[in-house]
Image (cartoon, rainbow, N blue to C red; front, side, top):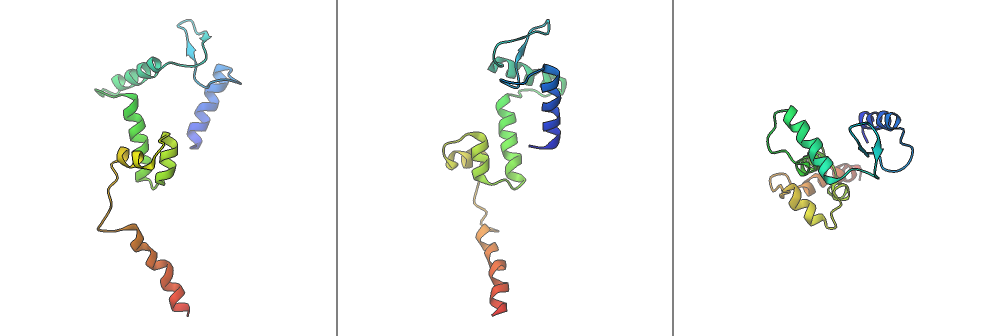
Amino acid sequence: MPGWVKNAIDRWLTAASAATGRVFRAVSRHGTVWGNGISENVVWYVVRSCAMRLELDHLAPHDLRRTCAKLCHVSGGELEQIQFLLGHASVLTTERYLGCKQNLEEPVNDRFGCLFTGALEAR
């Protein structure tokens, strides 16, 4: 978890006086906490509110999930770790989700050569 995310969550936990239970909770307009967590509708409302402030049309929570997964992949994240993050049962689902395609111009197995050239020269 990035440090800035941990700091933000720690600040929220302190402000919410939350020591146990779910991190995010429903809060009434009077500021009182109620229930055990937040609903899907609350997530939609938060995402829509932020999207409106940023003047983005048609942004949904699932778009954020997909973007997170694609950024992880582009940043060199392992497919299996992204599968775990997304909760997919099969890595094939994750591949389809990310739109993975085999790179025939620069196959990953072509990189093995650099591992063995030094060993062969040492003989």
